[in-house]
Image 1: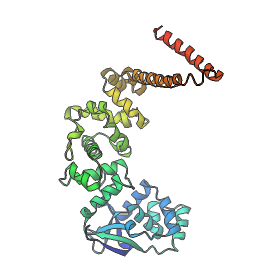
Image 2: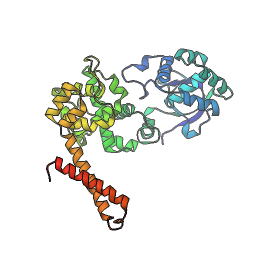
Image 3: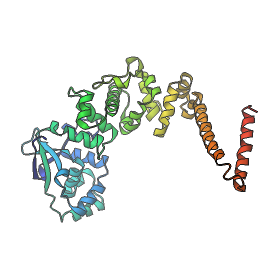
Image 4: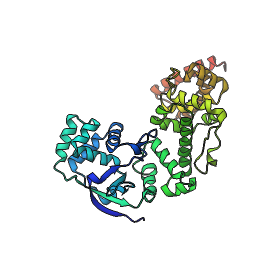
Length: 360
């Protein structure tokens, strides 16, 4: 366990971390003011529920739940909060009317909560101070990737990429954060492809917001073939430009299918993450893929790919299993009139279906 010191520190000496994985990646947050960071947390996250809790109960966490900090790298007698930025943001807003005005927390409820919170001593905050961020890596990785307080998928991917960027291997990161190889490989690859797309000028704003969809799409066999990706199991470290140069057009098309392309006036074709399996099947079929890219109708393209046939075969298999169960109970209920009527209806429907398929 790294050396650490526990103390109640003045709130005014605690600062938000501009390198927090929750913050959008396409911005230099280190150059921004504390108020700008506070405004981003206020706009991006729903802080009001946390504010209600602190106003009602105060802020007296046990040691294990204290804010986690390091000495500020460039400011004397200041601390950078590495874990607990949302809680710190709420504490600043509840105790500082100027901060509330700057971020736009001017609703009556915020003012009321600030008044209620004034009965608590929020000027000194329980903090555990660590020597540096590396001493916190294992804890943060477990807590927010594997453990009880998961980050959003994009933040997870960014954090894993940060760990791998320190010349660590997939095996190293798996051991440090208590995750599994498949999860770490998937996040590392998704981050690398996202970065590659951004550097190629592909609009990724919506992909960042819907990173979970992007991440899961890359796990579909048809999508991987479409992008020319290698075998995921062979990833040993942070990938660099996983999509071949010859498939960058396909990468832009995939992003457009998942999130739309305003520059072309096209909408997304995926409206539910459960459709990703269909998308993968369509992209694996030449005729279906061409139809999708031309008409942007996923259901139609999926049927062209044979998806309707596969679904029908699965339905027939399930019906056969259920009929076998019914048949097994025939002797026990052979005199039940309601059951006989139900069986007759199935018999008539089965005959009609068989005639349509030309099997009788």
